[in-house]
Length: 271
Image 1 (cartoon, rainbow, N blue to C red):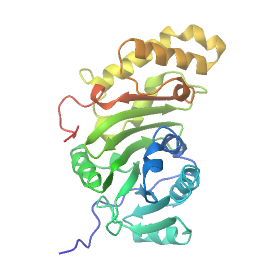
Image 2: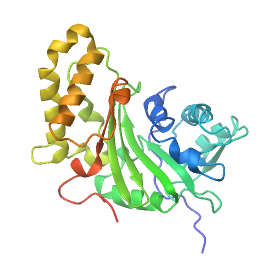
Image 3: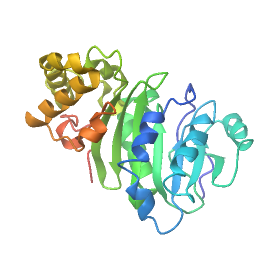
């Protein structure tokens, strides 16, 4: 029997224009090869876009610079939110009702971006949600499970491939940054309760703060130079950073998931 009810629950739906720009910039940058490699027009899903469809519209605008034929599909459980999106449909941008089952009429998604969605779920529901979405991805596909503040100045996201999570990205608005670990309050649901002694993500953030303090002398040349020195020291200390200075200048750091994944194993880490 065909499923008739979307998988998931209606979330608060809070959103703002330009709130997800940091993740969009990453999708159009380091992750853009996934879109370019697709033989068919790539399908990108804005899952749980919220009370306003603005983030799906912005995602379509930004990714058209990578692939002009990209198709962005906004998916929401709330029928009223879907109706609001329908009014903004255009070529390459559509809206439909659904949840973690990601209904795409039999197609697979190259990217599923789910921001500020799972944060509103219990931690023990994260593995099932990841598994459901992973089944809907192309072989090169990606689930981006992320969280950000209301203005998008602090953001984190886990990159999950069909075989499991591969990386964790942190992105800061550098101007006025006092302590990098302030981003801890915006960790994804898989990690938000793991910022405690004995957990790898806690060690990572502690080292990040320590190198930030040790790089204070670079502040005379600007916060960006201090951040670059911090990132380099973090890499030199053994943390497996997957990016380099071109991303660090943007206030962005990506670390291998295995280095920060929960120790307890409650959150799915791979096949």
